[in-house]
Image 1 (cartoon, rainbow, N blue to C red):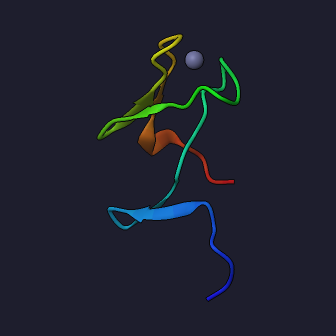
Image 2: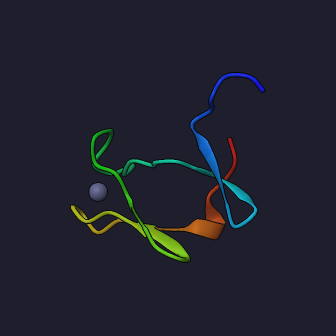
Length: 54
Ligand SMILES: [Zn+2]
């Protein structure tokens, strides 16, 4: 095993441990739901299945 990556396995998929809101920027993290992530500050919502890999 190498260094600890900022990822975790959730439901068999590799997902980010945290994701900040692209609208509000770093510091404002998205709230994770079953099928989406949403920002409690501006209301920006992202579909979890539409999250592109990078
Ligand atoms: Zn936001």
